[in-house]
Length: 444
Image (cartoon, rainbow, N blue to C red; front, side, top):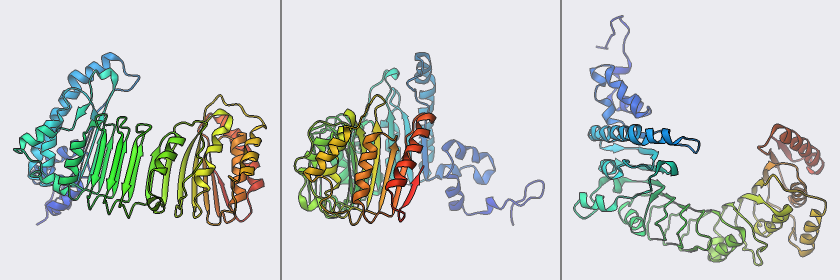
């Protein structure tokens, strides 16, 4: 018989099976899930079986006053961390977690060594830990509690069920060492996505022979000097952002690698590419590059990407537009390029005059621009457009080469309304003139 409330309304939701109800409340926040326990005796303990757990707490901003930070450190944060531990302890009845996420300040009392074992004792598929550091909090970084976990399990981590079931692991601003990475690789046999961001103790990364890993990210770890990836037969994507300027990247036997994401000084980025086997460069289908700075040192021997189809460049434009001269060797050596995305980043104090055209004249004479037309490039997106002469000259040469272009998207700069209005007028005036009628022109 269906449950009825006092006013005679049928409670059809409570008639659903437990697993359906758990799936529903797993979409709520953990606090909201707890509140459902007061609905009826049927709901009293369902929250302890939710499969998606996400914790976050207030963290100080750069504008926070010292008094507010002290309040957070001494009262709010310890209380919140106790709530997290108590909730996980009450969740012991659930043996499966689809997702566990915690985004908290890197403050004293975070006690990762207490609550992480409770998570790893479950069949957990995804763990995302983000420790947010702030100088006013007067607290340092936390380390991955390897020794505590080993001690808890009597000398081995392999007995943690969560390591065996883990498919995605993301650690942000949590110190990880080379030994920790080895543990992830050797024990997390189902791991498909590994992301380590902001680990200053990490110096060398060596991944050999993991059969399941598909996506790997090592970023914002300033002391990394070597990344070695060998015999990773399912690796599809590799991300190396904001590392030491002269780090070494060694790749071997990564037959499915098709995507590479990097940020570096442009001339150093060229050195990274030149250190990769040509056969691996030929595999790449997509490259995302966020260049952080430039030197007057263009690539003398730019690599060739025979099968690259999608290139995304974030161009930090300095020195009166001279930095534009460093990019052509990078993307004109992609004979099968189909989609090109470029984001212009300008400093507000740059001044240009007509002498900029001399750079492009010189480049054309040197053969940097199109020995033959781009016969595959079909879509181009130019974002951050402000209407300065280097952008206009660059886009003119680009349109001259893209003979089969189907769509051109121009996204205006994110500046004051007056600058945006002027940029929009310049964009329509310039691109209407150089864009063939067969090309779909979009300016937003």
